[in-house]
Length: 226
Image (cartoon, rainbow, N blue to C red; front, side):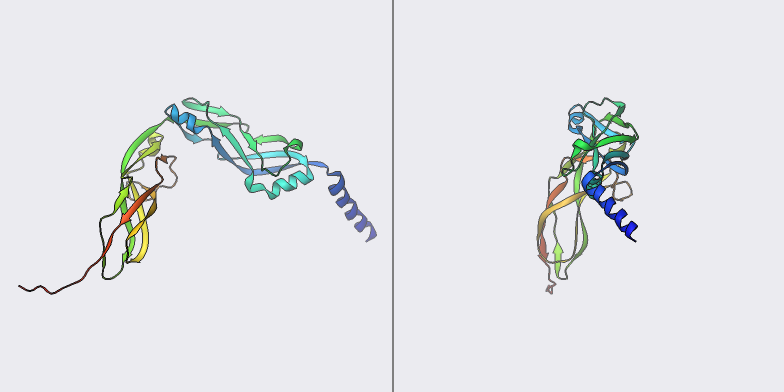
């Protein structure tokens, strides 16, 4: 028992005082893109990445690796696409360390993969009228009028194949028993030819929301005398 206790104490002393160096793998580190606005000004856009996550083998003091593990959600890699040309581009990524990590003692030993292939295509744009949809009900004795939408049209930008999937842009109000005028911003949703929401398209909108005013009026049945 004394030997086990001394071993544990010695191990704690080594970790706390000597802080030895070791290596550790960090898997599924997300890839973040920078420089896309430069491509947009050139009429280009990123159509595809060969990897959305990477694996890093990092060497550093035990205390630093422990801190990095605790801040795992803030670890990412940056991919600068500002100098890409149309077609496939192989780029080297840069680790983006959490702000509370001492990077002076960190060394990236292995990367999987070493590079990421970025596919760049011509930027395609298309304009769509914004439509309003009420998902829900109006209260008894009330009736919804015609919605006023601003902006009335939006521009969808991205690779031609992705933009062609979009058939309709809608602002959806989800509510039940609506009994008063609604006014506010609603997120814009992209729909395909089957009326299904598109969530995985690599496209952008020049306005992600629309300001909608929906009048709601009281209705009443009255007898008609001829």
